Length: 173
Image 1 (cartoon, one colour):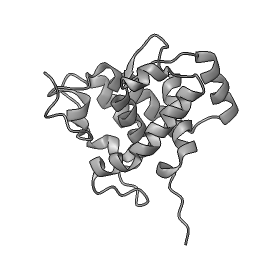
Image 2: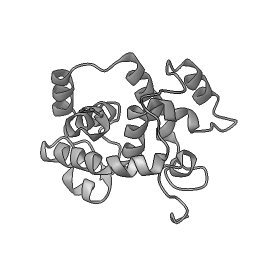
Image 3: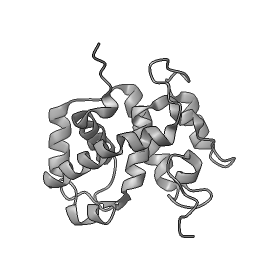
């Protein structure tokens, strides 16, 4: 029996990352780990409910309530989120390298674990040629690119610590 999982499909990973980058300003520098976390939640939207919003994050709480995703999906049971993120890391890195080779993102910045969009025009051309995403995916993208963009990556209240997807204990303070 052959099973398809879009988590391990390089072309689908490129598709997801293109849509994530489309919501980012070309002047922004984004950490590779941040994009990997965003991609994880786009891929497994039920896992976003594991993030506990802080008391002052009222907008994030409202967005989670509006999200049209079942809290449990029997086809996407994840036992260990960190392990799953590490399993898809080679596909995410390969997708970013592919986007750098297409001159969509800066290759030199990618070597420094940062993502900077070089050509928004080429990015938009690829997105139009690939097609639209579902409304559910649009909701997830709007959450991660707005709410998660404002949260710092390292630190006690950082994205890495709050999502518990990437080790943050040894981050510089």
